[in-house]
Image (cartoon, rainbow, N blue to C red; front, side, top):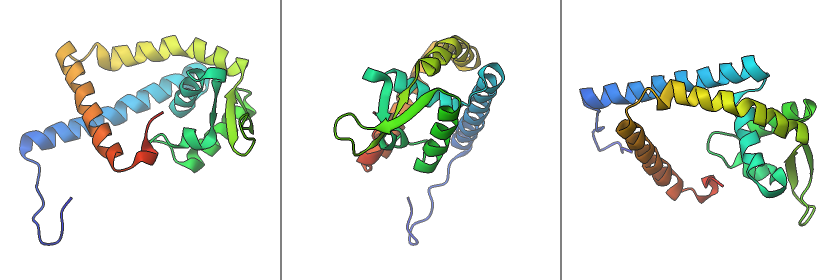
Amino acid sequence: MTTESQEPRWLDEAQQRSWRALVIGTTLLMDRLDDDLRQGFNISLTEYEISVRLSERPGRFMRMAQLADAPAHSRSRVTHTIDRMEKAGYVVRGSTPEDGRGIVATMTDKGFALLEEAAPMHVEGVRSYLVDVAAPDDFVALGRAMDAVTDQLIAGHPEMEIR
């Protein structure tokens, strides 16, 4: 970050090319993965990601606040997404089993079945659009770079911790 007294640290030509490639590539990749899920299973990439998170939890439930903690999801976006998923029968909402004070989203058997059906196509998309396109060393380096970015951005914001 800069202050008024400091000159911005502009990107050089190679950095600018890499930055633009990251932005454009990420946007196109996420749009394509989203389109595939919508066409194949009538769900969005956000619905898929929430389903994955729920499926990985014991009892397949999470507090709504925890779902909204993911950096890419605002509370209102999660609420609207869970509304759609609930109407489709993929999740139900209820009180937390521990104290009854929070709201949890619980994946239904129908939601889990949809995830099991959609996962192979989604993973194949990730593989064919990204993993198989990048050289293995480049893919590993990309993961390292994004881990460093994530760690740095979360360090000052513990509420953004990915659970």
